[in-house]
Image (cartoon, rainbow, N blue to C red; front, side, top):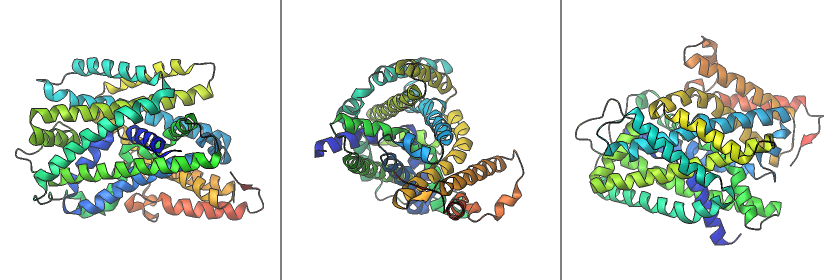
Length: 436
């Protein structure tokens, strides 16, 4: 790949990742973490940048991406896992969130009062535009990488640079009490779940592979190298933007306190933009949000539709694109806070499973392992993640979970992943090894 091609694909990947949550969550985390900002934002970057980077790269291990790699665990698991992932980062949660965030930040400030009707009409226009771009998936890299991403990056940088010049002498906020009770890096780590980028990367990896193939790269090794270089560029951009937005939230001084009924991240972004540029700042922020949400929603509609079309080839890509756009439109009209609230327990189950799967695929790429060493940890992590979520929400008492190592940090899946792999390896030593 030529250098300009790496930039085009890397910019495209950055824009696909950088959607609704990538604006509001690091800003809110910076505000709440106070003097623990550095630890919290590093934890956030680990799940919000490091894991997506890893997920995209692992997706290029096989020429056909995760669809081929996951079959090494089990063909049925491959289908079930990918359906859950695509629906989660697609029409059920991530896509509706792009529309509601774009509405709350880009439209509500110009309205006297936010109403269900105004959200309804905005989401119609938003999803019509998303559908129009998504119906031409082969031009995604050109449309997003060459045009939309540079515009998005410039507008974000303008806002961040301006706020740094305004707030550089301010002291950090006072940390929320939760940061006194729990390790700040762990709070940042779990907050990174909400971006959905680590599981979104599983869907986006095939878009990256196809974009690189469209550039004339067909050799498996060159596909992997091109993916790695483009992914590192996207990860670098994401990390810098997260730190900038988080620092802004950490140093802003609010004159009139926080509103009761508005999402913290959206409020902070609006407040900062208004302080930085007045009414023009709200327009600038609206442009940033609209572009970031548009690119992410477009990429997700394309990825989800392409996958389901591969499962059910008799139903066209365009039919799936229309269907998922309609579902996303309906769910978006719940409003931003409800979309986020509904997604939290689901993500607390899916993220450990997704991260375990990615790490296992990467590990076995370097160390060929029996299939049992993949299957046992996936089963154990899936069961414990589901039980932990049910217990945490008070739907079922399972106090015995508290004896698991790292349970208090919500990382109990890590020791289970390691021990499950070792058990599976020992039990399946005489089995054929998984290779790619």
